[in-house]
Image (cartoon, rainbow, N blue to C red):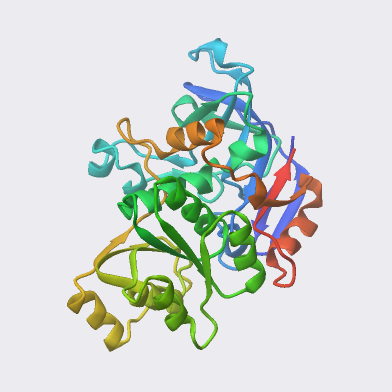
Length: 345
């Protein structure tokens, strides 16, 4: 099969590789769509994966075309998204079904071969089946949408809340859509580029604030009747965004940190005082919930199928796998508007 293989930092090669071999309990998935995550960019060009060679890609969907002898063959022909985390099932977190906190997990696309390829073998447990109502590219959006739902859920958004979402990338935009779906009376999208903020408005987000402008804090305060937001979801991971998340919250408000940090984070003294004196509740989230009781993936698929969540407009460009250089250049080019760039197989 063909795949994109990361052989070293910044050395991604489109080449023939052996077809995956199914283990017991696994199915063979013919990949139909795979998104390029913002985390794939440093993984490919800066930090590398956990070992070389590795096939990147963890936001994917496809058709089940074969299965191991111990797997129900009625799965063949069905389409599915895939939860990309492979838990150890032995640590204390796994015993509590908190798989994102697993102490010894594997992960498609970074710790083991992922979905920038034609086929992949995955455990049945990781399959999130979906109906033919959902296009494959929409199903591939289940990963970022589930991460965004985990973030929004952590904010404990109530009907009537004012919710501020910092970040206009894929996670931030979908988190804002989840906030709307949860009944927030006002959702404010905060970013630094007008084109992305305008795009947020086109998705139905109520208000926008450009945080790079001198009067951003005052603008946000006016939009929240002078008190700040009930809930702030931080989906960037940069120093200024994290500090602003504290400043934008009302007294007694809730702040959720989801953005992956770009470097060390420090709080200014007056910002830290806000956490204490305003008695803020500060929470962090990682990945998504895949428990038997709370499964963000199944919830997301249900929302996509019912139409209560629509991520189709976020897919701004699509490429063939062999056109990966152009696809990655699109993601990396600050002058090119892109939200989710997708490989369509």
